[in-house]
Image (cartoon, rainbow, N blue to C red):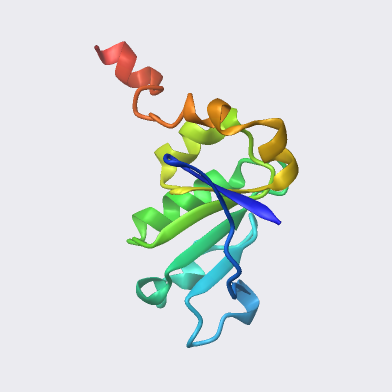
Length: 134
C-alpha cells in the first residue's frame, strides 16, 4: 500500500492501472517513469495522460526533480506525482519543480506524519530566493 501526499493531507492511494513507459498503449492514461526515462518520449501523448508518476528510487536520487520540471516545460498539465521514498524535507522542492504531490510507502507515512509535511505545504513561503528578494 501507499499514501498520496498533497497540500491538503494524506490519502490512501487508489487502485488504478498504471503502465511503465515501455508498455504504454494508445488507450492508457497513466504512466510510471523511471528516473532514467526521457520525458520527451511522451511528447506526443502528454495531452491524454491524466497521471504521470516519476520514480525516486531513494530520497538521495534527485533525477526525478529534473524530469518533473521538463514535463511541465513540455506542457504537461495533468497530475504529476513523485513515487517512492521521498521525505517531508523534500516536499517544498517537489512542489516547486511541478509535482502535485508524492506517493510514498506506508512506512514513511507512519514515520513522518502529515504534520511534518504540512510544515512544508506552503511551499512558496519556503523559497529562500523570495526571502532574499524581500
